[in-house]
Image 1: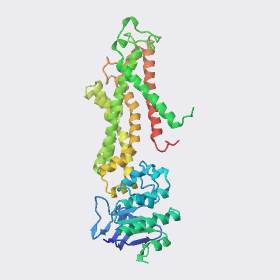
Image 2 (image 1 turned 120 degrees about the vertical axis):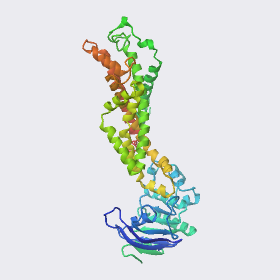
Image 3 (image 1 turned 180 degrees about the vertical axis):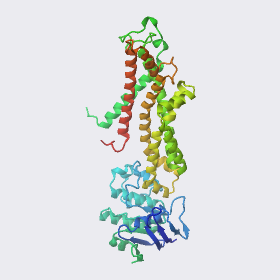
Image 4 (image 1 turned 45 degrees about the vertical axis):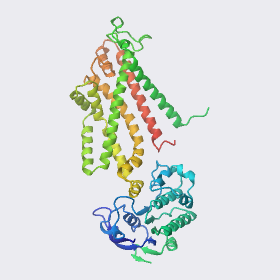
Length: 204
Length: 274
């Protein structure tokens, strides 16, 4: 079940310059690919395109040789950089998790999510705690590919390690592909099988 | 005694205001007609203990007439603003969710309705509908939804651009599910406050249109009617038929306005913590 981008180009509006131009890459199921580039090279835009949040101007995104499904649960899930924006402020966190599927005790404890947090509102938790919910929500949906858009940038090192180890072990268990968008070369080398440099357009 | 915080104080105030309005409404329903029946022996009496607001030229007790009139006003206000607010909710959501053409059409209608002064439009509609309570109700309901609809339209547009709505969509949730679970909880405070703030407008318009003679029939006790009658005798020195009913109307409108303002403060997440 490879996920591939073919000749992908994107601009935000007609008449504006292209943000991404003729991007080609491919990731196999069970692979961890790090997407690396300095700020402003379209990492987040590419992540949104791959998860179906945006539509490419030209080129296509193929999952297993077919375009992403329009309806139903998307098999490619994006976890964004800003957990506080990706969670409805008026929902208790239990509902946030239940939006994507059944709660799983083992996953809650693996992420260090405490029972009491489930009854709270998002403003009563910190950014790092919220991010665990976002990652758990994406994993609960049964996605085949996970796109992690700088998910650990704002976390302390211990929490980063904790979250990544859960994500990677879950990915191994389910043969899930992961695209990790990051600024951090050390992190990229530590978790990824391959690193794709968006600036030079090559694997390093 | 523990000191009450602002939220508790506001809620208490809201409760008291609500009770007062309810009292006026219920007593208006329960007053027998004899209480404000004409009594020529008691015509043109200035305010006294027996007639707190005095009597008019036909000897009708103005206090009870005013209470009865207020209760009619409250009925019109509640009915018209509820209809208006619900219409505004649906129209606002339709404009935000629908195609560009639907949005354009709705915005055009809103501009059109808002372009004509409310009072003139209510008079026209009420006149066409044959005046009376029905004409007034339809007139007020048809003119007051615009600004709330606009508010809800922009609110829905903002909400639909939020990350969590996009995430929800990629988790396979349908538009209806997102509307009920993500959007409506955010719209509810706007809706309730909009409804309550619409209420004094509706009452004032009811009184104004009745005052001008295009609303309720003259035999019905209504604030607008009382005020319009009192104008004839104002120069003859009868000041009380104008002053007391007018003051009560202002007071009620002011109270409801305060109620809406306080409720907004409690419901609005940005000031709820103060």
